Each structure stands twice: as structure tokens, then as C-alpha cells.
Length: 232
Length: 203
Image: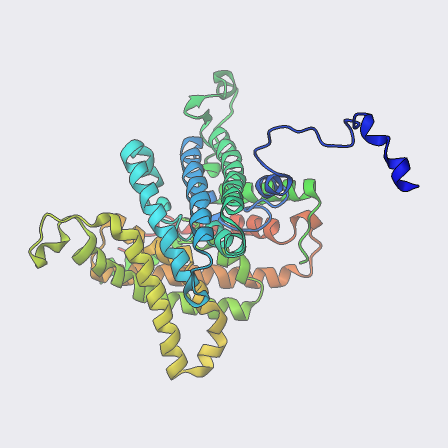
């Protein structure tokens, strides 16, 4: 009975809705989630509370923020990749020191590249390029993701977290540069008429307290948007 | 002597490593929930920084600086690209050593600090102080004072913040602002307060 009922079925072409349309996809569903989650819902800075130090120190201008963001994204992606490739060979007792040496080697490469190609920005970033080593995002992703997952997904996770970090860095950088010095990427954006009317640049934004308060407000906005609340 | 006291005041208050240079924020945010643990971590950081900053000074001066290997007959060797990895290795080693020494000689202190000691290796304040003293070209005595007083400044900030967060339990904070948000706002206010120290010169 069942066979007879099923027999005519192959004659009619299958409905297009029954099967997903075959198209070239770079990322599968899970990979895409791995990549996209850190951008908003699971953002490394506002949600996981990792990597705050450099997020505040390099954001007085958008230019330095962008360079730092690129450096951190590249280093995070590569370190996740390398650690994930080595994950079965690393003895668990010395894994921290192995991870640190992988990260430190990559940061040295990044530092040399920055010194070679954008020397003046590398001078402005000063010690904070070296401090990428102790940026908690790198250790956090290495320990929390790359040690358990295959290389390609770890790489995506690293890059995704790097982009999530970059997003926050550039937002804070833009606010601090516009409010603090009236410029954006070095161009004057606040019209002269406003200064003539008595507007003044907010010096506080360039200093440390402005950065802290701005990040606090940004976290508030982001968490109110995603509806996440920490228990106090 | 006056010069050293000046440097001490500057690195504890005026240029507080946490509130002016944003270093060590991660552990500052994570461990500032209770005064007792914050005090323990603060003391451990002071101890580790007092040791690592001069050791890293020695590594920089006799090993990594361009031309530093002149004492070994190699004046043209420049190992400055090894600075980062040498510094982080020293810090990890010192933290491990401190852990073992405390465990051997004072089990009570060890059990109080136990879980926080390994965390110090990835505290950016420790690496940051080492890198800053290289950038400023301090000498040995200055690097000891700078390392110790930066540590004291960091400890001061985290202990004060843990006390404030303890009081915050009784206030009604909007849900999305709880935790990280309100802590950042309070750190901003604290940083503003510390700016009042700027311009102090002991002379």
C-alpha cells in the first residue's frame, strides 16, 4: 500500500520549497552564528567584559582606534587559528604559557608591521600595541573557544570577536573625537558658526574620565537594547 | 630622595595606572565585588610589580636594547623585537615563583591569595608598567619606585571601588546599567576625582 502510494511521487518534480535552494555559501549556519554573535548579542566588550583596557586608551582619535582595531582583529583571528590547530598537542598543565607565547609572537609581528608602515600612529599607540598580549579577548577566546573547536570555526570566532571589539572602539573613538576636539578622522566637522555662538570643545572627553563615562553609557544603551541584565 | 618621592606621588595619585592609563581594567572589574578579595589581589599585585619592573629593566638594559649586548662583545646586535616576549616570560615566571615562595613560607597568605596569583600574569598593569618604564627611560632606582607605586595606585583604586560597589548593593540601579555599566560610570567619577591631584609637585 505504501509503496504504491509512494510510486507516482518521483514523476512530479519536487517542490522548490521542500529543499533549500542550492547556492554557494561560504559560511554554514553554525559558522555564521559563530561569526555574527560577537558583533552585538555576545559582544566581547559590553557583554563578556573583556579587553576594556585598550578600548579606552586608544580611542581619543578615530585613526588610532581603527589601526588598533585592525591589529587586534588580525591577531585574535590568527592566534585562535594557531591555538586551535595545536590544541590536541598542548599539554593542559602548561597551556597558559603556550597560549601566551603564541600570542606574544603574533603581537611582535603586528608591532613590527605597524612600525614599518604607519610609524607615526605606532608612536601614538606607544605601549598599547605591546599590551595586546595581555588583552583579555585573546586569552579569553583561546581558552574559551579555540581549545575546543576546529581551526576554521576558531578563526571565524576570533575574527568575529575582533570585529565586535572594533565596532565598540570605533563608536567610542568617533564620540570622543567629535565631542573632544571637534574633528572626525582629522577633518573639522563642527561648523565654525557653532564656535562663534559660544560652543566649546569638551576637554573632558579627551581625558580619562570621559572615556570611562562614555563606555558606561554605551554599555547601558547596548544592554537596554538587547535586554541583558547582570544580577547585582 | 626628593626626586623619588616626587615620582612616587606621581605614579600613585597623579598618573594612576588604572585611572589615567586604563591598565588592569579586566581584573579591576571582575574582582572588585568584595573588599577582602580586592585587598588580597591588590597586595599581590604590588608585590609582583615591585619585582617584575626592575627585572624587566635589567633585561631591557643588558639584553634587548639596541647595542645592549656590548658587554658580551656583540655591540651590533639589536634584540629589541624580543622585548615583548621576554617581558611576558619574566612576568609569568615571577608570578609562578612568588606563588611557590608564598606557598612554602606562608601557607595562610597563600590560601588567602591562592586563586588570584595566576591571574596576575595576564594583568595588563604589570606588563604596562614594564613597557612604560622602557618608554620613559627610567634608571634602576626609578624603576623600582615606579613599579611599586604603580602597584600601590592600582591597589588603592581597586580597594576603593570594591568599597563603593559594596555600598551600591543598597541602591536601585536600572537593570541594564547593573554590573559593568554603573561600575564604568563610577570609575569615571573616581578618575575625575584623582585628576584633582594633577599639578602636585613636592619641591
